Length: 219
Ligand SMILES: Cc1cc2nc3c(=O)[nH]c(=O)nc-3n(C[C@H](O)[C@H](O)[C@H](O)COP(=O)(O)O)c2cc1C
Image (cartoon, rainbow, N blue to C red; front, top):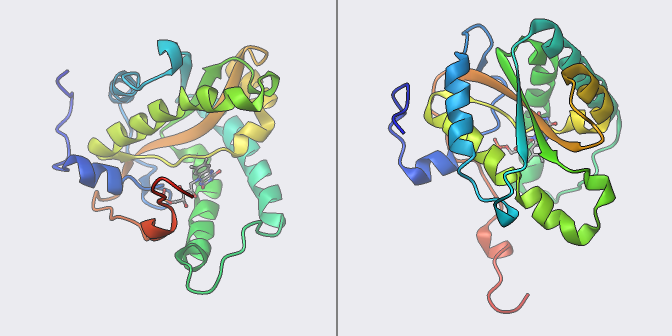
C-alpha cells in the first residue's frame, strides 16, 4: 500500500516509543482529510484478532453536533472523575507521581477542547463485554486493542496524533444513541481525538524501570 502522504522519517522503534497521548499539541484548526483517516484504519485492520474475527467497528465523526454531544458526555464523566480522590498512590521519586500533575493538566485541556477536534473515532467491538466471563475478556479486548493502537501508530507516522480516552465508556448507551450504534450488540472501546499535531518531535516518556516488571521463569 502506498501512503497518500509522506511518512515521517521514524524507524520502527522511534515510532513505537514516541507515540504519545497527544492533547495540548493537537492542532484543532487544521482540517484532516477523511481519506487519510480511512488509510489509518486500513493499516489498523492488519492487526491480529482471536480466530481472525475482525469484529471491530470504526465510527468516524466529523459532524459538529455529534462531536459536541460526545464531548459533553466525555466532559460530564471527566468532571465526576476529577472529584474522586486519586486511586493510585505512588512513592516519592516514582516517575508516575512526578508526572501526575502534568497528565492531569493536559487531560483537563483536552476536556475543555474535545469538541473542537477535526475528527473523532468511536471504536466498537462486536458483543457485549458485560455478558462474558472474566476468562473470555483477554480474548475479547485482545482482539480490538492492538488494532486501535495500530491506528494511533499510523496517525503518528503521518504527522497526526490522538489520545486513548475511555470516559465515554461510562455513558455507553448515550454514546450509542448519538451514533446510532446497536448498543445491545456492540461494546464501546473508547473515544479517540484525531488531529494533526503541532510539531512532530515527540520523545520517549519516563517509564518504570523494566527490571521491576520483567520476570524470567519465576515471578
Ligand atoms: C485505557 C486507557 C484509558 C485512558 N483514558 C484517558 C482519558 O479518559 N482521558 C485522557 O486524557 N487520557 C486517557 N488516557 C491516556 C493516558 O493518560 C496516557 O496514555 C498516560 O498518561 C501515558 O502517557 P503517554 O501515552 O503519552 O505515554 C488513557 C490511556 C489508556 C491506555
